Image (cartoon, rainbow, N blue to C red):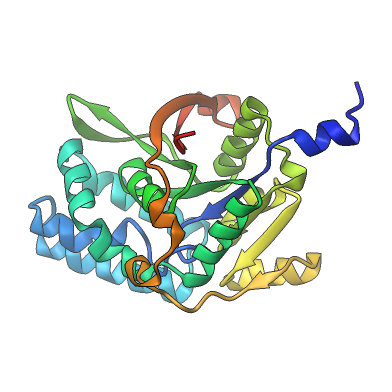
Length: 273
């Protein structure tokens, strides 16, 4: 059955934002390394290693091999950590660590998309325990994040769903099918060529502070390039985002792309309506 123009205009749209180096100026996971050290979860050597990884990530970007190494490092690092302790540390230090490194330009875009009645979805390779509170602080309606396996309240080191590359795009397509988003009229923002599948999944892709490979692709395809350079503390900015209703959290099962990937999970955050 062919949709009429009225039917198409009634469908929901969304804006999908990568997190690290797109909305915030650092790696969201590595930014908490000192707080995890102070909370007794990691030693000083791990703090230094995380600081070096942050430097490499910021200077050189993150290609597929680097992201895989980071995934292996982080999954090994968190094995045995108490999940509630991680959540408590993130909650206690969120505004000290993340608030000052949010790009002002990104927050303006979030506000503009909300004014246009689009849902804002943060899509990040970082863990749900980190991405959920950041998403709430930013006023996001939903998040897609990496889901670590948990047993007896502790991380096992296994990953149920890695929100990376094609998996991000698959989660977006599943979300669109379930909730009626028109991806051809939706937007996506990212800095990394590893997010190319996510950018290709929408009708309005934008590259932000792109790595070399993504900049080349954007030039070839005529995609807009945005340069964000002004981190600003949300408290000082006086953004209307901070008055947004606190979202409720739910979880939904999705298919993880290829059949061999089995079941995956993405965290879904809805704004109170």
